[in-house]
Image 1 (tube, rainbow, N blue to C red):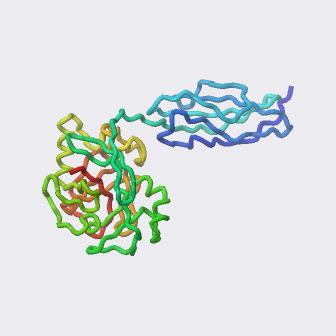
Image 2: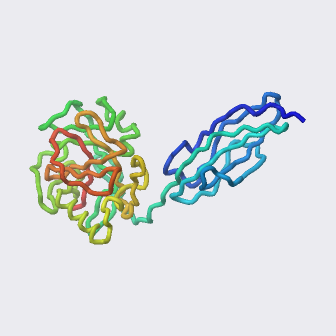
Image 3: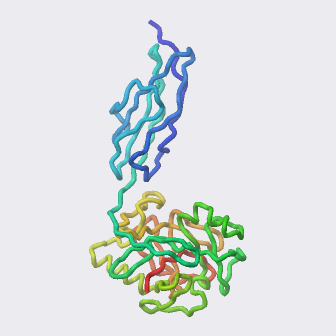
Length: 309
């Protein structure tokens, strides 16, 4: 008995190849195949943690989606076999993805910045209350896009216009907030190495820009609590390049928002935060140290985290 023609080649759609932080309720989705003879196409779903996946979790289904049972922080492999009534088969490629890592439950507070009514999550670590998000305050007009050592400058990553409304509509603004040069950070105040800094700067009333000493105090606390890689409990569980995600133990949700120096650079790979000591703090995807060995040019634009007075 001869075999009929094979189903037409098809491709997988979602989750994307090597995608990370995939939601636990994500469906497997693939493109439909067709049969040259006009016969119906049925699909077998192979899915699991082995590569190649050997377990058939669904067979002879007509739908081009499947809802698997996912466990957090696990890498899965999947492939689909299309079959027709005459015995012809065509297999897709094998794709992999990694499910979302669920962070610990955190008791968040909140604060509203009265200047623009943005509400921020807050967390308390070692007796100090921090914004759990990068500051996102923008003035009414962004102003010039050139760098300046003396005049305030505000940037949203990869946005080159002057409209605050347009800038706030970008994904980078929603995720990473605003990048500020040092004059914008200090907002007319002098630099400070005190702990606490005493410099409100660009932060809302009742809050201040932390000094280098305050970041160092946070790092010392984490090391004292047994975190030998002190950036690991601060980094977000998603959003860092090439497996550089953290555990977000305290809910601070540190994200790699990059910088402007003058070109926009390092988003997804590295984050930079100004201090009032005119030094910056940085974290990167390649390791879990908190670096404080950078004395930044005032014209460079970086993120800001505020601390409650």
